[in-house]
Image (cartoon, rainbow, N blue to C red; front, top):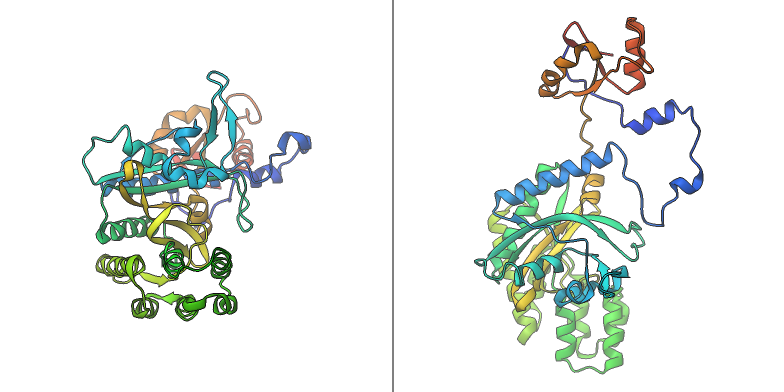
Length: 407
């Protein structure tokens, strides 16, 4: 039996349950609840859970020296889509500023904004510059597997340094944040988004052949790669099939006949893997060396973060404002919450108006206090009325004789 003040093992899932269970007013008109495709209201307890997860991540980022910045949701086009922002311009909603008659855009990604801040308002700050951010982004189109068009981001950027240890730091900090949220089965899938394009350019293939070959690589079609690859057919086919755990995939990449920029990219990846292993010896690392789908502005070692099969973040090397080298990683709180085990809800205790002075002590014990009123649905002094009111409001406990008793 639960003792007074003891936290219960399980709680009602959300206020939505109580609304369903006590629905006496009927549904609102359909037009009042209808939202555009890909947009939704985030209800209890999901909204609070997401906010807590973001603050947990931001606390870990801050502990590693990443200072928080807060760029605006809306910017003029010339700043929002400058530099690396040009790569995400096709995903942005646009509107006209009624004051200046200049076009503005809603951000689809926060990384280009952070790069702009580093290159302008923080241009005199010492490098390497560590910045963190969290906020909503709005996409013109949702993805096939994830149709949401308003998404949350929380991430870090390490600006002004080009070093394998910087790549390792980004991965290590993200791993710590995921661990704090109890996200299971985390893995980091590494890639070089520019490698395939560099190799094809070095081979001096015709324009149409380049397009067909890149399309085949994007679709992981080994047969077409073999047919269209020309002098690259063998090596690209091998690299395409090498995707998997890092030891084997990296060995195949380093053994490939690469030259010039392609060889430099591979060697940098090898150094980054060694740096990551030094900080996270037990991390699950995989490698897909010729994957480039969805990498709009990344120029070097890049990483996709998975929790099981759920993609929960991605990032890597890119060129920031003022041509500064940078690397970063952005996590998706909504995806993290789908992957992580649900946290138990906080217990709710109903406090009668006559005992409201005791509510502060209950909150210090971890309870959510729900204050009763002298008028309304429960205005009787009868104990049964108090219990009925506490149950109606979704409480798990009721305050009696100075103690929180389970319902």
